[in-house]
Length: 611
Image (cartoon, rainbow, N blue to C red):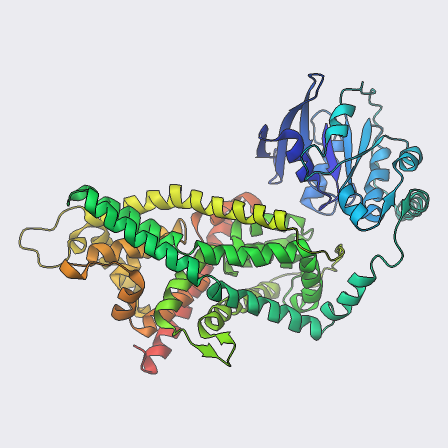
């Protein structure tokens, strides 16, 4: 069976509930759209193969996702038609969802309708008569709650019933008259089957008068983002101090147990110093995600996209680019993948190319380290944290740079017309605490997995390069100077010296291309092995504060605003564009921007006495 429904109707949650861990993710043949497949078993022992189709508002496709969905249910994809089509709908928004149901009915496939989110509909005072709805649509209607255990029991029971034979009808793209007739039918069915409380959207409308106002709305958005970055520093101090203390204790404990030698150096200078220097920033990353998830769950993000549509139109984008770009603040990879919803190829390509300029969470450890080391922790204007203001400024710098790049790309386009934005604005709701907790848990687990796999691997590799070969007899400097990493760093120093980077920073930039967080761990490893005698590096922050100039710190901050993307993001760009050309263009222009911006920053800072 195939699950068909609008975006945000809870379809994927229902898919997860039905299939659990018996699922896999791949791409459809020939395209980069994600394909989710799973298997379920009913109470009677029937095994059912389940396909979660990409969300679509209509079979008259406007995006790559919708085109894949249309091709699967109409037989144009080349694979067998589904034996059963499950039309997943949002019980709180049937006015929008029923259009797709009526379109799908014309395909001649056996189908049932899953009336999802029925619990939310009851809370909002929306009453749906499923018997009347089933009679008017001519198909079974089953209530489901995709986020509750047991919320799909009625659907599972229905799957044991015999499935009628398909009588497929060739699909024909609807004309304007067909669309208008469908909308009239939707209104007729809603009038018979659905009762909504009077003024159910009155609260949302009152909020929107402020939130969508050209002036006040922009102020609300700016204040929201500003407070978000203030919280990243203000709320994270206590858990970060606890993690730092735990890391220091662990290092001393390992030293007490493991005899001095190569193994102790690997564990203390490599693993503990490297991983501890990254994990300490987990609280700040989770606070950033808490805000993003809360804004998304509340229904505010589509409003922000609508609000920014006119501004983004001046640089050749539409407000639809806002969601992928905001996703890129978490990680550029889901941001690049989210551009699939943009129907205009030029808009989509521009969004992909500037997504890396949004400051992803992997940069946050680098920013936090440098800001804490070089920016004093003081209050500005009685309420605001100076470190939070600097972090906010870095994010704004990335956004402004992205808009500038988009404007330049617009100059090279043949068609510079603005694509109109049509987007669903859901009703406001309080963020669900369970969803927030699950989202934060998933993000923390992903981060820890990265720490335990790629970051650990790179940390050990860097320790090896920083330890071997051993220094020659009679050497007076720290051992790392004579190692492979030291040799590489000395070579790269010639390239990066004009922008203020020493050989230790040059070494850290290399593994940072695999994962940005590694740069902090790499610096911890390099400086731990660079120290001699009693000067062993126990804390990276005071060490770099005493050995780097402010000009170097500012230059490195600017480098990470533009820094060439990590390998994973470049791979995602290749997958989404199906071309190596755009990968090389992205890597090249980001490196050039980073170097030029750092050179200007460093020279100006030196001129003002910060060198």
